[in-house]
Image (tube, one colour):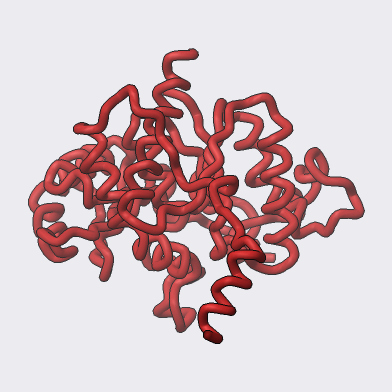
Length: 152
Length: 148
């Protein structure tokens, strides 16, 4: 076994995703470069990866979020950008973890809608979210009726 | 500010919403980062060393595969630390090998058997569900704040 010397010790990396009708990842990157002071920014097809000291990264993200609060999403990343263990430049194919992001980004416009409507929502209204209990199985009698109607 | 365990632990949506509403999401990235940034012996790809399955013995028996115990050494401490949890039940992308699948079952079991408030959800498939989804998470986290 060889010695392991970590890179970027003491830093955090965060993903910034943008899924907006008014803003592209390129727009976001330009704004991020304008305000980045000592943080490392990597542009991606979905947004950015920002690496640096936690307070610096959070300060940049705070400003970026204000550009389009309900369409910009942030999450932590364990690896720094370009890490040979994760970077697809070394591995080929999609980066591990990309499929999860791809799936969630396909639904994220629904979350943006939820965030947009939250301020105008009646605070007394009890939420009725999609949950495992809310799924209703198709009744067999109803299925039989559907089959019969198709046959007829 | 409460510590909220999220499942799937890599979820972008949950991680963002929990942080956005002023709480701390406990996600896999934090545990991975801790290992990636700690010097030691090279143990690629995630710096999971032979010590991790031993730590996982706290959550799973010795005859349970080391893959499950190794994973539990990441997730177990977060579940212990959590003050609440949000679980999305129809996250098909969390499916993987038997190690992932059994770990996922064990994570859900541990979360439900610990005495913390849990919000059970599915992914929002349309805009109406999205409104209710976000409102439910907002209300859950607000109640959590009030009860502290």
